[in-house]
Image (tube, rainbow, N blue to C red; front, side):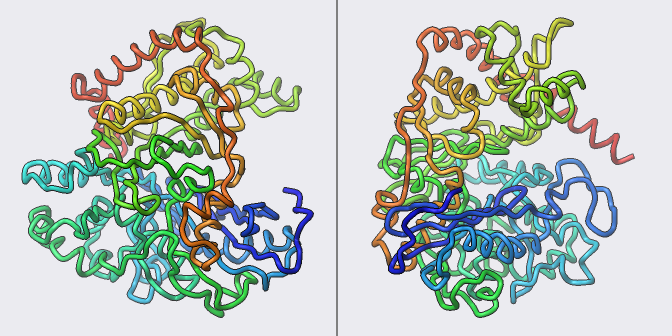
Length: 560
């Protein structure tokens, strides 16, 4: 991005670092008004480890997704100093650094924070690595967690829409215990990556309130009881006290000060404020000035996370959680999400597009995604005759079942790639509408949809979301909204603002109602959404369990 014309000597700056699924992004932000002066991206060298373990070549089972923690530190070493250089500022004017992470991305460490996968005796053990948010192999453990909690009437279960996800802390930890007890025993700390990276920056392990509440079942100041955990597995009884529990840092709070070592990595001044960690979705709300009730933010990338504030506490079926102050203090923070969105579009382009489409895209000087979008946009609603279910990475909300898989209905010998591509785009919009209607039916008003993330550059997709949901669709101005949100939290941690709300008013940016529903298309989508809902319930609510059975058949085939 071009540097601002105002980098006066008395200006103060904050750095935000967004750790995504494939890369880390750093942005330098002026504290007074949120102007983004420079940014840089560092790709993770190991990416998503979902096929073979690094260094050994050991093939990973289905539904595994790991990462290597050194990739995260390399973001601090490269993207941060590059962003500062791009901004053309004096690093001594930086007053704070904030970070955000995908969640639940979690890793086992020793007491000093050393990841187990970095120890020679565990370098070849898959359970010693970071479990990325999209690691779904703990579904059997999640099923048991849910069944036992429902049987016992655990009070925390309704706060998560009645179901705990296989993506979250307890299911993943229980999987480690039951599949590699030696790694579990060696684990001193079961750490969210959001907190681990802050630990590396300031030398202090502070557990952030956001991931603790949404991913760690911390409600009303308490985790699930020892008695409940023992009923899951006797060896799991002391998981909270021995491996999980840690002081909680409030969002926008100061976790500590930048250490001398981290100052060398980043090129930032030793001793500046390091903000308490946060989740990439939740930290985006202030960047988009979405800190009031009724504003749902959809952070759209490889997956989509839906977050919003509410002034009432409601139990929303299939939500990812509701946490007091989970986004901003004084309001209930709600979360829901879709496990696959951009990932689905990328999968289709990578696996299902014929060579002549690739060649034509090259001839036009556009990406295959752009070419398919142009073709799809020329169709009338329903012209392709298809309905898809957006479950290629399972369903996060509202079914909370990662054993589900993608479905496309209506294909014929006349079906073209652009037909299926459009059906997949529409399926993700239908999934978002399902989430919105579930919130509204539970008494949580949704009045505005605000989109952030890489997919908002697809204007056809954005218009489709407005048409399908029937809501005005606003867009975050920043292309690096999570990183901007982290910088906003850093400014609060450094004392430049009293709270997140006031910082958001000064530093956040949003364009209101960029897309509004087209009445004719919205009416036409009603029939398609009705069919989506029928398929959603037929395959997702137990009427036909074929998708889970197919998963079982696949696992058995691969195991032999």
